[in-house]
Length: 362
Image (cartoon, rainbow, N blue to C red; front, side, top):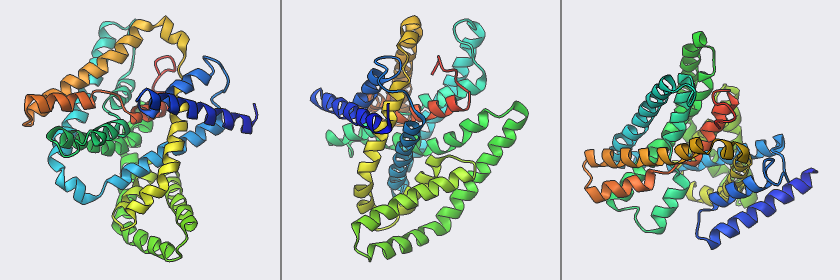
């Protein structure tokens, strides 16, 4: 199948998936995943998961990180610090610890059912710690609950999860290094990330404001959008050159712009790229699903579907209660955050690329 036919197939599939989900009042993300499964190599085999499409889908993650970076201005973090660095920190850390230890205990007790090293267990737990920012924020906003007690807690936890993605993206590739080199790899990756972020955030905001003002004075919308793409992909390229991820550079680009007066214009201009490319990312994720494995190993699939949701519901509800919420507020917070998130897919894909997760488990 040629490049044009493949592009038309993806666009048609995306349109049908989104229309179907809109009619059923479901999030578009489910539509993208569903059409990915249908057209993928393990179902109708209309499209193979080609390298070109994978690269395009990577840009979806880049723009998702950029949009999250835009939301991270420091005043917002300060006003929500109790929920972000209290409930959010506890949720992410406890999920990582409990799931990693639980996986290793299960592996030691039933190696025929669940066999894995601690690096794989840690990669899985990092994916499990995430909830869907895209879906939950839309749900909370549509129901006008952003300023409610549970709404503030939900937003606080989501903000911390989004922040936690950055060190997790740095950590996962380092985990695949040989045991004797792993500590050095983690330390080096962490040091690089700290140096790069400090450099960019200390002088970067002044440079960004000056540059955007210069571009805005030309009063050309086309030039402004081109400049946004250049800045986002340029910083993503710099972080990749430094041995970190594309997504980290895009996150920094978003943070730099969030402090300028052009933030809202940027959000409007970047939204179409973000939505379309992220949709493509979810289609490629759907294409990975192999029905043969689901049918052959359905008990494991059922456990991996139900257990994380129940675990996160209980964990978040208990933590919210312990941090001062009433029973109703704690339960609503838990229900909103119990599901899995789009960054779980990103982290699992990254872990798979670094040979931390076997294909059948993915």
